[in-house]
Length: 115
Length: 114
Image (cartoon, rainbow over all chains, first blue to last red; front, side, top):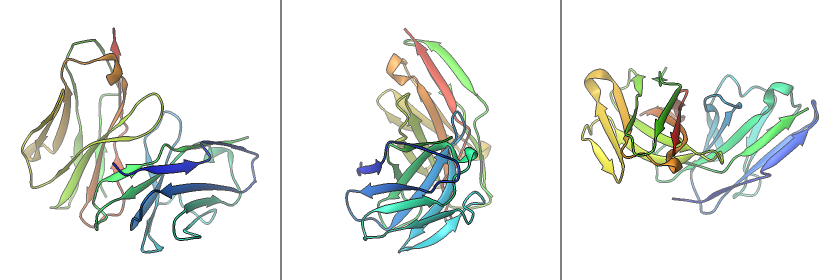
């Protein structure tokens, strides 16, 4: 199983502040994803990133969200102005292999708390 | 749009009992893939199995087994002789051949009591 790390493990921020969540896959992959899970709820898709561009995004992924691979290895999710309802666990995932339908392996998650 | 339904919210069993988790899905795709993930109390999402829509063979891995029935659009998961370490939330998920995202069910919380 490929290893994916995420930093930080827990982020506490004030409403309206910007946060950047980081994902570091150990080896090179083509497909990257962000999902979130509000406490006690289902896992929700945010965005998929393929070949250095967004391939699909959900309704949740509005203008306050952005993703990028700033240095070709890290994969980041930025929330420009956090809201209380952004409090959730954010998971990065990668797919190995050459297809978007390959198994997605998840990082340990970043717990975001917006006060 | 893909839809995955896990009607069982919580299941509680005593150790060594078998437990079956139901998963029913809806899709218009002819080619799709089904998954099960485990989320233990520590919070990470652990991949358990991937099954494509053309392979209806049941699969067994240790105490885990999966029953895929296309006729009823179900992909059920059974834990045999449950153990306390099996206590977790289990998610069923689906991805269509042209999708870039997993669609998850709501999850089933399994509690195994010693």
